[in-house]
Image (cartoon, rainbow, N blue to C red):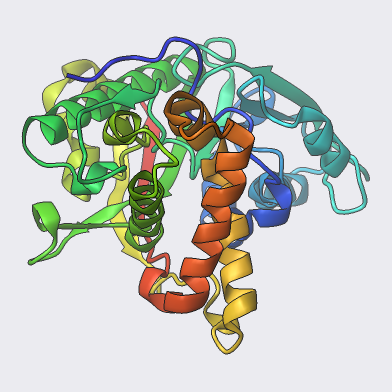
Length: 364
C-alpha cells in the first residue's frame, strides 16, 4: 500500500535549476505561438488581464513562458492594465526568479510593464482569488504528485514500470491529484479564461512494460541501474530502495481525459479545446548535439537529472537508506558519480525521450 509522506512535497528544493533547465526553457520557447494565440483570444475580456504560471520554477523558462502573452496584450492595447503571478512552492528560489524578472532578460521594464506578484504554496491548494486569472499555464510541473509515495516495488523506482496493485494504486493517486488540480483552477479562472497544462506524457507502445512508453524512460532506468548497483555494493539499504518510487505520473491522452468523463462538475466548468500527446520531432534527446563527446554528454545529463531528482533522492532514498556508515551527502555524491560514469559508457542508450501531454481548457 502507498504511504503518504506528510513532511514535504515531491519537488521542493530543486538543485542548480536555472543552470540545468534546458528542457524547461526549450518547452517554453516551443509553445510561444500557442501562448500568443490564447492571449489574443482573451484580450477583450473585461478588467485586469492576469497571467498566472503554476509551478513556475526559478529559471529563465518562467520568463519565456510569460513573455509571449504580455507582448500580445501590450501590442493590442498598450494602455491595458496587466499583471503576472508566479506561483510555486515555498522552496522555490524566489530571489533568483525575481532577479530574472527585473533583470536585463526579464519582462518587468519598459512601457506598460505588468504588476508582478507571487503566490507561495502548492497548486494542490487554492493559490489566488476566485475568478482572478485570465490565462494560466502549468508547464512541466503537473506530473508531480501532491505528496511522495512509498510502494514495495523492488523492480523499479518510477511509475511506468510498476505492475499489478502497485501500479493501480499509484494511478489512483495521480488521477485524484489531477482531478483536484482541475477543480481548484476552475475556481481561480475567470469566465472565458484559458488553462494550458503541458507536462511530460506517455503513449501506447507494444512490447513496453504496461504497453506504454513514458517520457524520460532512459533517465529513470539509468537511475534504477545506479540504485541497484549501490544496493548490491552495500551502500544503500535494500528495503529503503525497494520502497522508493518517484512521486510523479506522466499521463496518456486517455488518462488526461478521465476526470471530464467521470465528473459532471468538471465537464460543466470547462470547454475542452485540446487534449493530446505531442511527440517531439527530434525524439527528445536533450543533448544529442553533444554525442560526439561522451564526457560532455554525460556531464550535461548528470547535471540535468540532478536538478530535478536530487532532493527526492536525498529525502526518500539516501537519508533513510544510508548504509555502511555513509551519510546522505556522501551517498548523493557517489550516486551522481556513478550516473555520470554510466552515461559516459552507454551514452544515448539512456537518452531522455519526450512526449508532451497538452491540455488546453476554456472556463465556461
